[in-house]
Length: 454
Ligand code: GLN
Image 1 (tube, rainbow, N blue to C red):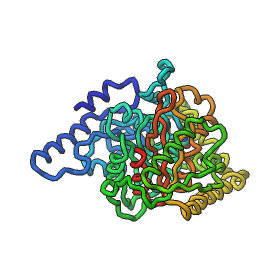
Image 2 (cartoon, rainbow, N blue to C red; image 1 turned 135 degrees about the vertical axis):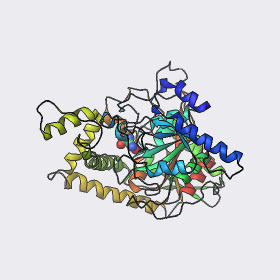
Image 3 (cartoon, rainbow, N blue to C red; image 1 turned 90 degrees about the horizontal axis):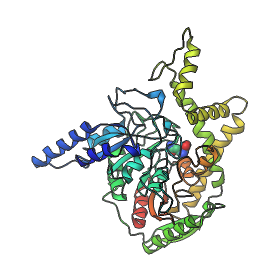
Image 4 (cartoon, protein in one colour; image 1 turned 30 degrees about the horizontal axis):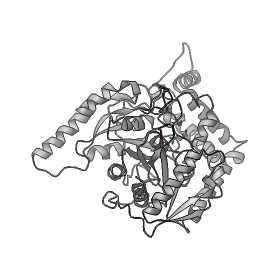
């Protein structure tokens, strides 16, 4: 009940698109009944969580924060959300996000931007970005509106908003969580994962969310480890690599200091620190901003005004006019930009110059990591090149916005697990995040090193 009251009192943050108190209450009642009957409780019995509005929820509006899907009520439940309900959790509501998960500040949402509950110490009351695209999730958890939420991460959308709001979030290995029923952005990159106040809660959530699903062809056929039980902040015998290419030009001294602090914490936990090289790092961002829009342009072709939500049918219009009118009205400017970039890089004349090149770069980046694993078990980097910026500060400049993803995109391209944990506050009193990157399937190692930092 307390969470339901808080959610409806915190409208100013705009974290929720839809509130579903009855769903959360039903789970709470079920947990109470099980407790009263002396039954063993499910792992998330009665826990009220937020659901990023990219996960299809049966009978509950699912919009991807786009006008295109306004009013769309799926007739099916996504695998990940179903697994959470099976584990006993209940849904407080659907969380706001960047439209179709495209963005780093939550400003591309059709339903208005989310506001971070954080403020600069001496910076007046300028509202700050909660990060993106999972900005509703990060803001709601930071404001204590819910103890945990789902996120999705295509190029950093779990980790960067977690860093901006002082919470934790893990993107597992690609294929750990089923993509079935998650509105697709870039299918070869999209991965669901949990966001929560601390590492342990992330481990518990991830256990419930992960697992093989025959309905997703890229789902990994592996048992779900007991990550919570395996938590151990003792890093003796572990080597942590510091990738020198992540020391980008113009990196604020506070981020440098944060990174050094992280190194010291990991040393204190017993880890050995080694310098490693990931030579193709600087090509990751351009490759990502070719591959992700290319896949998006294909995935978003399904929103044609016939099958889902929005339809614009001007008087006397034919089929083509309906497509055009629907898509012009339904997609926001950032989504349209991505579709245009995507169709351009996939067009016959430019395919080899852009798309094929980007795919080769992607392979080189994955190989960089494979070579690094010969020298270390984990990597430590900052999560983002800055603390949270003010709303509006970067929204007019897409390139400045894209640059915010510089540290999160390489591990997305490689499909490997990565987590952001709070590392401290900057001079304005805003949270900064540290990122732990691990080998494929080594979520345990990532969680453990994150625990040592926390
Ligand atoms: N900010 C990145 C983008 O706009 C990543 C988004 C995401 O991970 N969903 O594409």
